Length: 322
Image 1 (cartoon, rainbow, N blue to C red):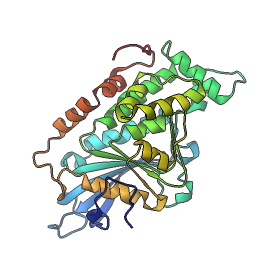
Image 2 (cartoon, rainbow, N blue to C red):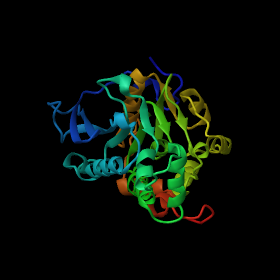
Image 3 (cartoon, rainbow, N blue to C red):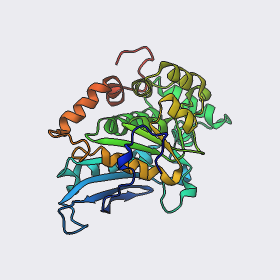
Image 4 (tube, helix red, strand yellow):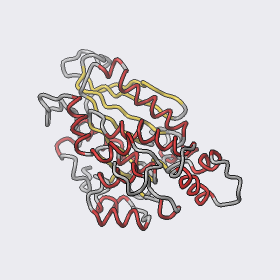
């Protein structure tokens, strides 16, 4: 069935499923990177890694018990997976690839409730040695507030997430798609915003900037990323200043996401769209594609957020220039 809520997919590609085989390139502590290798029509074997029609990478976030929160462990795992994308022999010899980021678990869809539940508030409280009886949100807000004034474990964590994960994903030299399988909050939302496109499940889950509710400021990197990726000022004002929870339908109408699907169809839709975006796609080939130029073009498009993420500090003043 064609999802009429998604303007990005062309009708003629919806039912196509090219022959393929998959290889796990990285797997550790609930984060994995899987390469789906599309078999070439000229290849006599479906397991030929050198003769193919493209590679669709999927970065799976399966730290379900922690709700895929962002903490030093998650950041380290994401950095390792991104390093594999840069260096693995299968990938370094081709420009014809795309990336999907998702929390979908194909073996058990029932546990796919979170794409990313924001920063790890519990870790932040422990890192700041907060022994008070203050509730979690307020204590975490205090930790972020302290981080904006001087360097501490929370500021170092956020800066590493920004510079080594978000800035990297923002400028990868190929199409990136977030398949949002559940709640997408705070830092989880910024991970999705770093991608070129966003698809979201219907019926359950919401998108939210929670900072106003938690008594936090955004910090420069998160603020500039939001401004670069949300073109409608009214949506930005509503989302940031009211901490509104957006359903998939509301997020689509607001332009935060590019399509909505039932959970059972979400990954397939993201996969088809990733195939469409391959530089050597038969539908829209980029004849003289240059990955370096493609990365530089993304830097030019989202220059302010890239600079804020890559070089900014949590302690930068709200009114400071990037």
